[in-house]
Image (cartoon, one colour):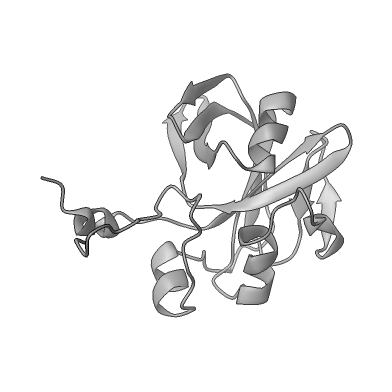
Length: 175
């Protein structure tokens, strides 16, 4: 038996994950981002295969991770979290720059940026895990606090989209 409530005790942050394909930019909100090694410093992310950002990373083999600030407001989070880049230009609504890797870096409401070159990907069924070494890293706000998933849910009253790794679909009233 699996008590899915136990999964709620895992801690997460919220991040913008962005990439580039053929000169176009896209990004999304992810919570499954983690450092997997120290030497060399490598990150892993898990993204839903249906997302446009997933397609961009599959093509370019690179991505940026940008931890969100705790002060980020829901309208800003919604730009990357609840709309598809297939029919909405997310980067037309935010301040950003292009880094040395050619990737879009959101310069508002983010603490830092870490650029990663994908060295391997693992098919997880509905999601793909992308893993690779950090190529560039920059602190954007040294004194800011990161937005945790718990804060997002309890204080901001944010919802979990169906494509997220932490989405729980309860069936038959069993939680």
